[in-house]
Amino acid sequence: MSTTPLTATNTDYTITDDEIPHSFKQGMAEIDLIARAQKAEAELAAAKKRIADCEFVMAHRYDIIERQEPRCNEANARAEKAEKLWKEFIDLLEITEESDSGNRFRPNYIGSCRALDGQRMNQIIKEARGMVFDAPKE
Image 1 (cartoon, rainbow, N blue to C red):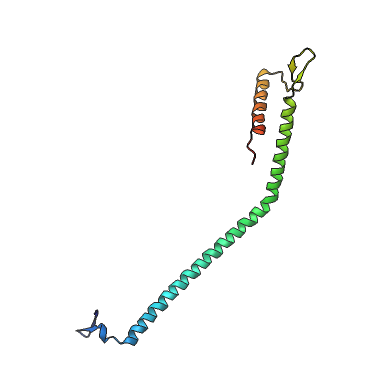
Image 2: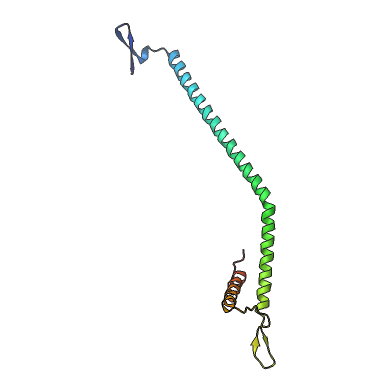
């Protein structure tokens, strides 16, 4: 049994739980439920606003992606074409033939009168060949 102290004009009086009318207790419980419901409604409204904000952001991002897709497709097509051209170019440089005397040689080559530039070009071609022929296919 709980007691609630009351103060009235310099006199202390304690009311026991049994002395509180049932209708008063029920009313207090209803007030508590109403307050909880209002708090839940406010939390729900805030959650709905956050969801709406997220939906707006996602729609905006989707629009950006939709606008970028044609550019991405074009870039992918150009990259594929460049890869095919590199492969064909390197294939041409790697052709070997045999002369009438039995010596093997490459009829196609890139040369430079500068030795260092020629070495660098050979290195670039080797690296490009590795990228084109050794690239993992998806």
